[in-house]
Length: 439
Image 1 (cartoon, rainbow, N blue to C red):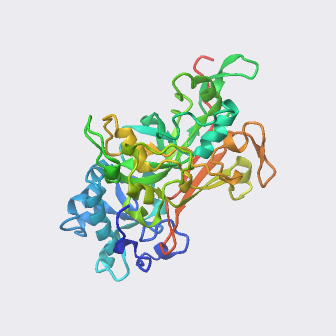
Image 2: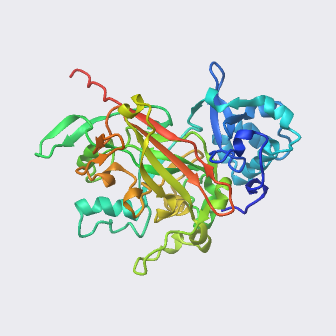
Image 3: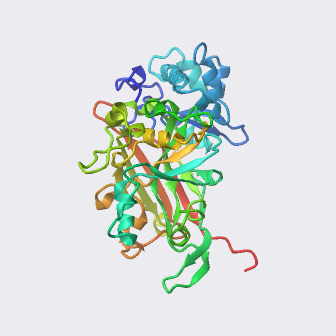
C-alpha cells in the first residue's frame, strides 16, 4: 500500500457538508472516480464527494487543475477512464492531492468549485471504463470448502487451491453497472431424475465479491513481479458474479463455468482508488502450519504484511412483496474481505506470470468473499445448500433468487484512526427469462 499522506488525514473536512456526515460512503478521504451525465448532456468523468459529484470536465475548463495533475485531470474528465488508468498511480496520486485541496474546508477554490458540483441524485452513472477482459478468481477457502464438501467430501479443496489463485476468464461484454436489471438466463441443465432439459434457470444465485481495475498493465510476454504488482492496480469496486447454479453444475466438466457465469456481472459505478485504500491495509490470510508455502514468485514480505484490506461487506435482499410494503431490504450476508486466502497482488502477478497482457480497465473479481461463520456465507449456494430455505423477516422464504428479487451489496473500509469509506451500492433486480424464439 502507498504511504499515508494529507489526503488520508482523519481531521480533514470538506466544505461539501454532506461529505462530513457520519456514515457517508464518500467523505473527502475517499474521492472515487466515475463517469456520469445529466439528462441530454454528454458523458464525462466525475469524482464523488458526499452526495455530490465534482464535474471534472467543468473543473478543467474552469482552470482548477494546473501543473503536474493537469493531464491526469483531463483524462479523469473523459467519458471513459482508461487513459487515466494507464498513467499509473503516481499521476492518480497527484490528481487526488489536488482534488482533495480543492474540496477541503478553507480551499481557495470553493467559490468556483461549488458552482460546478452536480447532485448525485440528478446523475446517471455508467461503467467507468471500457473493460477489455474480465477474470474471476476463487480465493476463499470457506466458500470453496463448503461447495467442495457436497461434491468431493474427502477432498473439498481442489489440489491446487493452496498453491495458486484459481481463476477462469469470463465475459467482459456482459459487465453491467449497478441499477441495471439482470435477466434470468435460459440454459441446459440436468434434472434430479437425470433428464437433460433446456429452459429458464431455476437455481439463480448471487456471489458477493470485490472487483479490481487494472492500471497500466503489462506488454505481452512480460510478467510482473509480486513486489511491483500494486503499481498495476488502479482501484476497486463491489462486484456481483451472478451464477446460474443448475446450469453451472451440468456444464462445468471438463472445462469449468461458461454460460452459467457469462449472463451478467454487476459492478458498483465508483472506483475507489488504490491510494484511498491505504489506511485499510491488512495482513495476508494466516496459513495453517501444514499449508504449503507459496512459491517464491507469489510471496514477498510487504504483500504478506499488508496485502489484504479490512472491508466489511454485506448483501441484502429486497423481494417484490417487501418493496410493495415499503419495507427495508433484509441483510443475508455480513463478511469481510480479510477472509480471502490470496491477495489481489498475488492474483495480478499470477495472471501475468505466463506473459498474459493485462490492459488498463481490465477487471479481476476476487471470488466469493465468504468467511468462517454462518452469517458470512456470501452466496445462496452456501446459505441454503439448495435444500434449507431461509426465512426472511416478513415470513417469505428463499432457496434461490426469484423474479423481481433485488440484491444489494454494500462495502465499508474501516480501520482504527481512519475515516471509514464506502463504495456506493452494487444492486440489480432480476427480470424474468425471455421467451425462447419459436417455442
